[in-house]
Length: 258
Image (cartoon, rainbow, N blue to C red; front, side):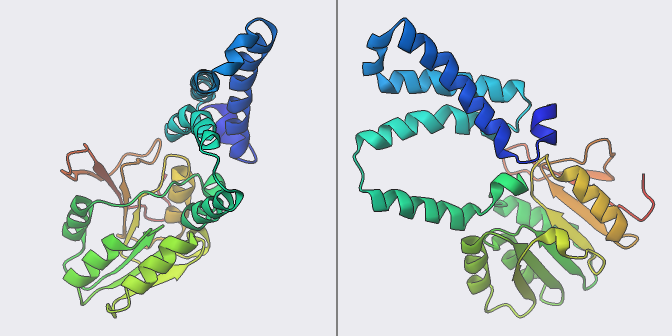
């Protein structure tokens, strides 16, 4: 990951810089040399998005930002053509905020674990009664699957986005061995769990490793869906077999692990 993307105090700054690169690269030549192209707003928006995506790539932004840059300005132009009422923009913003909350700061998009991932994780659970936590549980579907199949074990999910948390909380009501909490999992100790599950993004993995190494008890497992811990060799790599070439990276980060 590039220096700007990794070290920026606010993760939106690299995205804003990439968008500005696209605007300048397309806007200035159009205004000075080709003003007639201003009639073709969608074409200009697509060019701007392409340049913004290339700038984002050059700055080492996570891969999902490429799609956002490519689509942002064209979608804005298309939405403006629809002449939508102002309240709809506000409603859309509030809905996105409730679903994704502060993804710009956490750098963790809303990833939902597949049914194949739930089955694979179920097979990794210790045979004895155990305690499991899902860091950023989304809608809680994975935990509900585990809780139904392992009623003797305890499951905890933490989610910071209001709407997914509410969905997960309501859906878990009939499962006495499942608890859904709203909050920041970085403030929650991992010391009481036999297995910690995370489906995050590459950005927080080094910090998660440090937290797991400091808090998890000896023998407990850290299972990361899709994203490996940089510079750390996993104890096991498990093929989820979901058709998307997904792997679980399984670690046992006992205290003192390098």
